[in-house]
Amino acid sequence: MSVATFLFLALAAGFAGFVDAMVGGGGLIQLPALLIGLGNKPIPLILGTNKIPAILGTSSAAITYFKKVRPDLRVTLFMAGPAFVGSILGARLAASFPKDFFRPIIVMLLIAVALYTWKKPQLGLHETLKYSGKTRNVLVAGFGLAIGFYDGVFGPGTGTFLVFLLVGVIGYEFLKASATAKLVNISTNFGAILSFQITGHIWWRLGLALAVANVSGAIIGSRLAIKGGSGLVRRVFLIVTAILIAKVSYDWLKIQ
Image 1 (cartoon, rainbow, N blue to C red):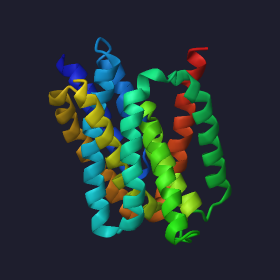
Image 2: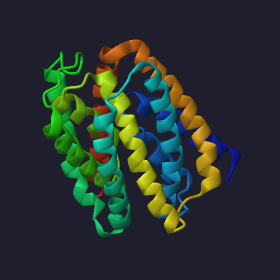
Image 3: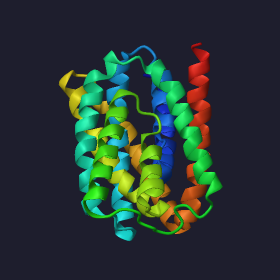
Protein backbone atom coordinates (compact mmCIF):
# COMPACT_ATOMS: atom_id res chain seq x y z
CA MET A 1 0.00 0.00 0.00
CA SER A 2 1.34 3.43 -0.93
CA VAL A 3 1.71 6.23 1.61
CA ALA A 4 -0.85 8.30 -0.32
CA THR A 5 -3.44 5.51 -0.12
CA PHE A 6 -2.90 5.08 3.60
CA LEU A 7 -3.21 8.82 4.24
CA PHE A 8 -6.44 8.87 2.23
CA LEU A 9 -7.85 5.99 4.29
CA ALA A 10 -6.72 7.58 7.57
CA LEU A 11 -8.34 10.91 6.70
CA ALA A 12 -11.58 9.15 5.78
CA ALA A 13 -11.47 7.14 9.02
CA GLY A 14 -11.01 10.29 11.09
CA PHE A 15 -13.94 12.08 9.46
CA ALA A 16 -16.05 8.94 9.74
CA GLY A 17 -15.35 8.78 13.47
CA PHE A 18 -16.32 12.45 13.84
CA VAL A 19 -19.67 12.04 12.06
CA ASP A 20 -20.49 8.68 13.62
CA ALA A 21 -19.88 9.96 17.14
CA MET A 22 -22.55 12.62 16.71
CA VAL A 23 -25.39 10.87 14.89
CA GLY A 24 -24.15 7.67 13.28
CA GLY A 25 -23.58 7.23 9.55
CA GLY A 26 -19.80 7.03 9.69
CA GLY A 27 -19.91 3.91 7.53
CA LEU A 28 -21.09 6.15 4.70
CA ILE A 29 -17.58 7.62 4.65
CA GLN A 30 -15.24 4.90 5.86
CA LEU A 31 -16.50 1.87 3.93
CA PRO A 32 -16.53 3.53 0.47
CA ALA A 33 -13.01 4.82 1.17
CA LEU A 34 -11.84 1.28 1.95
CA LEU A 35 -13.55 -0.04 -1.18
CA ILE A 36 -11.61 2.54 -3.23
CA GLY A 37 -8.28 2.17 -1.45
CA LEU A 38 -8.40 -1.63 -1.28
CA GLY A 39 -10.08 -2.29 -4.60
CA ASN A 40 -7.90 -5.34 -5.23
CA LYS A 41 -8.88 -7.05 -1.96
CA PRO A 42 -11.81 -9.44 -1.36
CA ILE A 43 -15.04 -7.74 -0.23
CA PRO A 44 -15.33 -9.80 3.00
CA LEU A 45 -11.81 -8.70 4.00
CA ILE A 46 -12.75 -5.05 3.45
CA LEU A 47 -15.98 -5.43 5.43
CA GLY A 48 -14.22 -7.19 8.29
CA THR A 49 -11.35 -4.69 8.43
CA ASN A 50 -13.85 -1.82 8.44
CA LYS A 51 -15.29 -3.06 11.74
CA ILE A 52 -12.02 -2.59 13.68
CA PRO A 53 -11.80 1.23 13.49
CA ALA A 54 -15.59 1.34 13.72
CA ILE A 55 -15.80 -0.47 17.06
CA LEU A 56 -12.83 1.35 18.62
CA GLY A 57 -14.07 4.76 17.48
CA THR A 58 -17.58 4.00 18.73
CA SER A 59 -16.16 2.82 22.07
CA SER A 60 -14.17 6.01 22.56
CA ALA A 61 -17.24 8.11 21.74
CA ALA A 62 -19.30 6.08 24.20
CA ILE A 63 -16.74 6.72 26.96
CA THR A 64 -16.78 10.47 26.24
CA TYR A 65 -20.57 10.56 26.29
CA PHE A 66 -20.76 8.54 29.48
CA LYS A 67 -18.81 11.20 31.36
CA LYS A 68 -21.55 13.77 30.67
CA VAL A 69 -24.66 11.89 29.49
CA ARG A 70 -25.86 8.81 31.35
CA PRO A 71 -27.85 6.44 29.11
CA ASP A 72 -30.48 4.14 30.59
CA LEU A 73 -28.27 1.09 31.09
CA ARG A 74 -31.26 -1.25 31.53
CA VAL A 75 -32.66 -0.24 28.14
CA THR A 76 -29.18 -0.41 26.63
CA LEU A 77 -28.70 -4.00 27.79
CA PHE A 78 -32.12 -5.08 26.51
CA MET A 79 -31.25 -3.57 23.13
CA ALA A 80 -27.56 -4.47 22.89
CA GLY A 81 -27.97 -8.20 23.62
CA PRO A 82 -30.34 -8.93 20.72
CA ALA A 83 -28.34 -6.53 18.52
CA PHE A 84 -25.21 -8.63 19.15
CA VAL A 85 -27.05 -11.83 18.18
CA GLY A 86 -28.60 -10.18 15.15
CA SER A 87 -25.28 -8.89 13.84
CA ILE A 88 -23.68 -12.35 14.09
CA LEU A 89 -26.58 -13.87 12.14
CA GLY A 90 -26.49 -11.05 9.61
CA ALA A 91 -22.75 -11.33 9.00
CA ARG A 92 -23.00 -15.11 8.60
CA LEU A 93 -25.87 -14.80 6.12
CA ALA A 94 -24.64 -11.66 4.32
CA ALA A 95 -23.59 -13.56 1.20
CA SER A 96 -27.07 -15.09 0.89
CA PHE A 97 -28.88 -11.76 0.58
CA PRO A 98 -28.94 -9.72 -2.63
CA LYS A 99 -27.77 -6.36 -1.26
CA ASP A 100 -29.29 -4.44 -4.18
CA PHE A 101 -32.71 -5.50 -2.89
CA PHE A 102 -32.19 -3.45 0.27
CA ARG A 103 -31.26 -0.14 -1.37
CA PRO A 104 -34.73 1.14 -2.43
CA ILE A 105 -36.19 0.05 0.92
CA ILE A 106 -33.48 1.88 2.85
CA VAL A 107 -33.96 5.02 0.72
CA MET A 108 -37.69 5.06 1.50
CA LEU A 109 -37.10 4.50 5.20
CA LEU A 110 -34.49 7.26 5.37
CA ILE A 111 -36.78 9.70 3.55
CA ALA A 112 -39.55 8.90 6.04
CA VAL A 113 -37.12 9.42 8.95
CA ALA A 114 -35.90 12.77 7.56
CA LEU A 115 -39.41 14.10 6.87
CA TYR A 116 -40.74 13.02 10.26
CA THR A 117 -37.81 14.65 12.08
CA TRP A 118 -37.94 17.83 9.98
CA LYS A 119 -41.71 18.32 10.43
CA LYS A 120 -41.40 17.98 14.22
CA PRO A 121 -38.90 20.68 15.25
CA GLN A 122 -39.31 19.86 18.95
CA LEU A 123 -38.64 16.14 18.43
CA GLY A 124 -35.73 14.98 20.54
CA LEU A 125 -35.02 18.34 22.15
CA HIS A 126 -36.52 17.16 25.43
CA GLU A 127 -37.06 13.70 26.88
CA THR A 128 -40.68 12.54 26.67
CA LEU A 129 -40.67 8.80 27.34
CA LYS A 130 -43.64 7.02 25.76
CA TYR A 131 -43.22 3.51 27.17
CA SER A 132 -42.00 1.90 30.36
CA GLY A 133 -41.43 -1.51 31.93
CA LYS A 134 -41.90 -4.66 29.88
CA THR A 135 -43.40 -2.85 26.88
CA ARG A 136 -40.30 -0.70 26.45
CA ASN A 137 -37.97 -3.64 27.01
CA VAL A 138 -39.73 -5.73 24.36
CA LEU A 139 -39.69 -2.84 21.87
CA VAL A 140 -35.99 -2.07 22.25
CA ALA A 141 -35.09 -5.77 22.15
CA GLY A 142 -36.96 -6.13 18.85
CA PHE A 143 -35.32 -3.00 17.46
CA GLY A 144 -31.91 -4.26 18.56
CA LEU A 145 -32.32 -7.64 16.89
CA ALA A 146 -33.56 -6.14 13.60
CA ILE A 147 -30.93 -3.40 13.41
CA GLY A 148 -28.16 -5.79 14.44
CA PHE A 149 -29.16 -8.15 11.64
CA TYR A 150 -29.28 -5.26 9.18
CA ASP A 151 -25.82 -4.09 10.26
CA GLY A 152 -24.40 -7.56 9.64
CA VAL A 153 -26.05 -7.95 6.23
CA PHE A 154 -25.85 -4.45 4.76
CA GLY A 155 -24.85 -1.70 7.20
CA PRO A 156 -25.20 1.91 5.94
CA GLY A 157 -27.21 4.06 8.33
CA THR A 158 -27.24 1.64 11.28
CA GLY A 159 -26.39 4.35 13.82
CA THR A 160 -28.86 6.76 12.22
CA PHE A 161 -31.72 4.26 12.52
CA LEU A 162 -30.77 3.52 16.13
CA VAL A 163 -30.86 7.21 17.06
CA PHE A 164 -34.18 7.78 15.30
CA LEU A 165 -35.91 4.82 16.94
CA LEU A 166 -34.71 5.87 20.38
CA VAL A 167 -35.93 9.44 19.77
CA GLY A 168 -39.06 8.95 17.67
CA VAL A 169 -40.45 5.76 19.23
CA ILE A 170 -39.06 5.59 22.77
CA GLY A 171 -38.91 9.35 23.42
CA TYR A 172 -35.30 10.11 24.36
CA GLU A 173 -33.71 13.46 23.60
CA PHE A 174 -31.20 13.39 20.73
CA LEU A 175 -28.11 13.65 22.91
CA LYS A 176 -29.11 10.75 25.18
CA ALA A 177 -30.25 8.69 22.19
CA SER A 178 -26.90 9.21 20.47
CA ALA A 179 -25.04 8.13 23.62
CA THR A 180 -27.22 5.00 23.93
CA ALA A 181 -26.85 4.20 20.24
CA LYS A 182 -23.07 4.13 20.63
CA LEU A 183 -23.28 1.38 23.25
CA VAL A 184 -25.66 -0.68 21.10
CA ASN A 185 -23.48 -0.13 18.04
CA ILE A 186 -20.49 -1.54 19.93
CA SER A 187 -22.38 -4.82 20.32
CA THR A 188 -23.32 -5.01 16.62
CA ASN A 189 -19.71 -4.31 15.58
CA PHE A 190 -18.39 -6.90 18.03
CA GLY A 191 -20.75 -9.57 16.73
CA ALA A 192 -19.71 -8.86 13.15
CA ILE A 193 -16.01 -8.94 14.11
CA LEU A 194 -16.42 -12.41 15.62
CA SER A 195 -18.02 -13.68 12.42
CA PHE A 196 -15.41 -12.13 10.12
CA GLN A 197 -12.52 -13.28 12.33
CA ILE A 198 -13.72 -16.89 12.24
CA THR A 199 -13.41 -16.82 8.45
CA GLY A 200 -10.10 -14.92 8.53
CA HIS A 201 -11.47 -11.79 6.87
CA ILE A 202 -9.85 -9.04 8.97
CA TRP A 203 -6.64 -7.15 8.12
CA TRP A 204 -5.74 -6.34 11.71
CA ARG A 205 -2.67 -4.17 11.14
CA LEU A 206 -4.51 -1.82 8.81
CA GLY A 207 -7.67 -1.87 10.91
CA LEU A 208 -5.80 -0.91 14.09
CA ALA A 209 -3.85 1.82 12.28
CA LEU A 210 -7.07 3.37 10.94
CA ALA A 211 -8.60 3.04 14.40
CA VAL A 212 -6.20 5.72 15.68
CA ALA A 213 -7.68 8.23 13.21
CA ASN A 214 -11.25 7.07 13.83
CA VAL A 215 -10.88 7.36 17.61
CA SER A 216 -9.45 10.88 17.27
CA GLY A 217 -12.40 11.95 15.14
CA ALA A 218 -14.87 10.25 17.48
CA ILE A 219 -13.53 12.09 20.54
CA ILE A 220 -13.83 15.45 18.77
CA GLY A 221 -17.33 14.64 17.47
CA SER A 222 -18.70 13.45 20.80
CA ARG A 223 -17.30 16.47 22.65
CA LEU A 224 -18.84 18.81 20.08
CA ALA A 225 -22.18 17.02 20.42
CA ILE A 226 -22.12 17.38 24.21
CA LYS A 227 -21.20 21.05 23.93
CA GLY A 228 -23.87 21.80 21.30
CA GLY A 229 -26.60 19.75 22.97
CA SER A 230 -29.61 18.05 21.38
CA GLY A 231 -30.32 21.00 19.09
CA LEU A 232 -26.97 20.65 17.32
CA VAL A 233 -27.25 16.85 17.19
CA ARG A 234 -30.72 17.17 15.60
CA ARG A 235 -29.37 19.45 12.84
CA VAL A 236 -26.41 17.18 12.13
CA PHE A 237 -28.79 14.19 12.16
CA LEU A 238 -30.90 15.77 9.38
CA ILE A 239 -27.81 16.62 7.31
CA VAL A 240 -26.32 13.13 7.61
CA THR A 241 -29.68 11.52 6.84
CA ALA A 242 -29.97 13.63 3.67
CA ILE A 243 -26.46 12.59 2.60
CA LEU A 244 -27.29 8.95 3.29
CA ILE A 245 -30.41 9.22 1.10
CA ALA A 246 -28.35 10.72 -1.73
CA LYS A 247 -25.56 8.13 -1.42
CA VAL A 248 -27.76 5.03 -1.26
CA SER A 249 -29.99 6.40 -4.06
CA TYR A 250 -26.95 7.02 -6.26
CA ASP A 251 -25.58 3.52 -5.65
CA TRP A 252 -28.97 2.01 -6.46
CA LEU A 253 -29.52 4.04 -9.67
CA LYS A 254 -25.96 3.32 -10.83
CA ILE A 255 -26.64 -0.41 -11.03
CA GLN A 256 -30.00 -0.10 -12.78
